[in-house]
Image 1 (tube, rainbow, N blue to C red):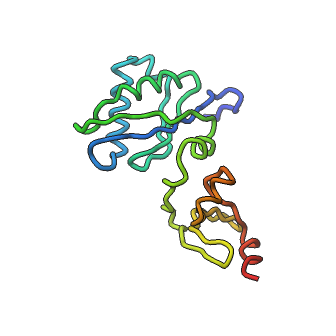
Image 2: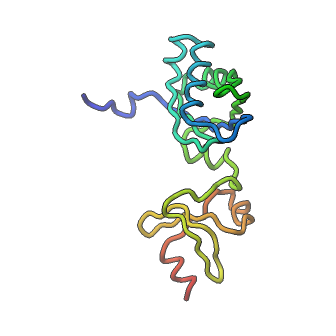
Image 3: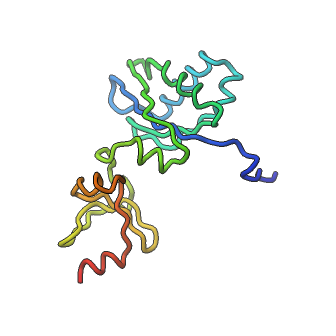
Length: 171
């Protein structure tokens, strides 16, 4: 079966959300079960099909959900009706909607909450730069600096460096 060209595919939006629950971190499967149940109860089969949920990322407290463009408002309404997860009282708060995962992360997920969870994460320090490497692709390095003022001034979550920048800092 052939893949549809991008001009014929449905447009997607990414919902950044936060889960507040009495219990400690929420299980990914339990969250999805409750969201699907709430959607089914609120909108029925037809409404559920229009949304097209896909959980892209979730760390137990915050996450990003992909939905179809036409189902954004329905998804927000359905997520707002979730009142318990695995028997514990819970609430889902939508932080915002964006057109890409990167934009949703940068706009709506606070930089203080970024944890270096990647296998490649390692502390790095020199006289001028110190922080934790979050992602490394070839010569490009993304890191969360120890000085949070750098992130506030730049209005980003990560500082992008290359291995050439690090070599020049050492010299």
